[in-house]
Length: 154
Image: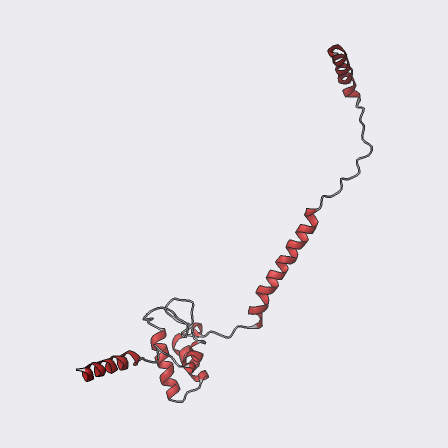
């Protein structure tokens, strides 16, 4: 009875660990898959496609593993995929501009923000308008009226 249970558990473990190259790809398969765009509609590479039962990445990983077993180089495998699926399947390595452009844009934005705050935060002095006239002739008649009203008020 115990031997049957152990045999059943070992068989279940063997079935659970039996995975294809697509389910548990090797480092070499992932390295090549990082250079190939998945064609299922996601923006990921073949190596990083997270779609369950992907119609493209799973067979592509198996094909990469078979080609590597035949001794093909990474370049030959990638060329084979480009020949079959077109140039859009190839993902190149990020260039220096992929790292420089975002940081320089952030830096430029910070410089622009700093300039804006310096320029518009401090109140600007008013332009010289000349001496202020406190005694306006048009207001003199109102001043006299106010003085009369105040005198009557007392």
